Image (tube, rainbow, N blue to C red; front, side, top):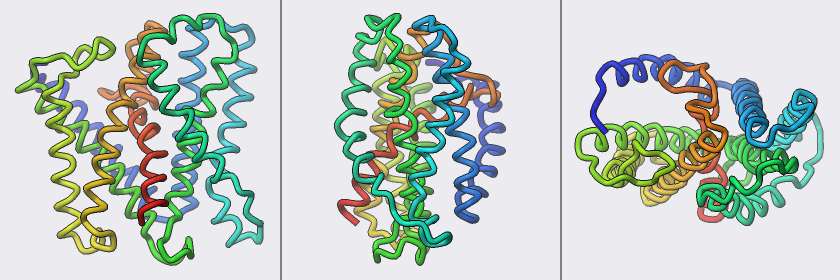
Length: 294
């Protein structure tokens, strides 16, 4: 994969604007974070329904899309029940326990099933729409809950969750950027036919450089030292590896639907799913690690 300066500049400039918007949502108030990722979740749902509609040629897809997007966003809101409970006197609804169970049991199997190519055998299967609940709504709901996480048990006192979410997203960005650069200059061996431009050299180089960068940041940057640097090694590794599989999963969906990009809302980056495919798959695994190990 040769290095393309024009493409890299377009991606870099778009990414700077994107990072500014994302950091505002991440580092300001939780309601703004909820609004930002609610919009992102809705955009991902819209593109997912478009892709599946192309695959199965389902009738009345606008009605189905509206129903699923609304239900998906409601599920995203359930990831923030702790916030609503604290601020509006609402009780917890116990959603997170079954969401993580679904994530661990179903999401990896769904991912491997689709990446393996068996997805093409499901042409015409209308229930394929429902897989979006596992693929999209569960990770975004867990992301809301992760943002509120606190090791002390008081979900709203210290910004541990905010730090973890920032670290996870930075891990994905660094991994993507380094994989592209290393693959451009050193890539020789194709990683998968699903994504011909990805190479083993770029993928491994991106993961290693991601772990090193995030681990050093976790050791030296004061706000990140609230979490021990060995945890940063694990979080960055999980985000980078799972994120790579997330990218392959979305690529398989697009190839099955014969699409190049899921959308066009970001020049040089494609659509919502193109931009957040890695985050979607990485979130459940980072959520599980944080809740089990921190």
